[in-house]
Image (tube, rainbow, N blue to C red):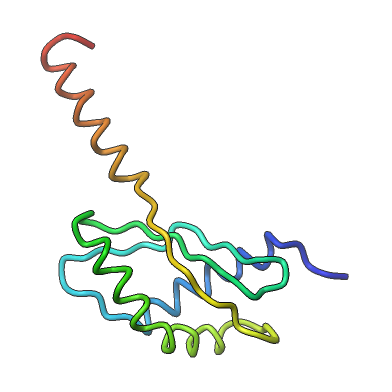
Length: 115
C-alpha cells in the first residue's frame, strides 16, 4: 500500500532540513529556517519554503541554496529512500516578517492609546 503524500512531505522536510544544514554554509548573521516542504505525488518535484532573517538577505539565501543544489541532493540521497531524487525549488515564507511588522504597528497604537 502506498504511503500518503503527507508522510513523504514530512520525511522530506526532516531530510531537507538536515541536508541544508550539512551542505550550505550561510554567512554569519543570516538565519535560514526550513518552514515547510512539499513534494509532488510522483516525487519528481519538491519545494522547500524557507524563512530568512534579516529579510534583506532573502535573495542571497536563495542564491546559496541554488548554488549548493548538487550538495543538497547528495545529502538528501543519504537520507531518503526514493527511486529518483526530486528537482528542488525554493520559496520564501514571509509570515514571521509580516507578523513582526504588524506587532510593531500594534505596539505603536497601544503606546498612543489608540488600541
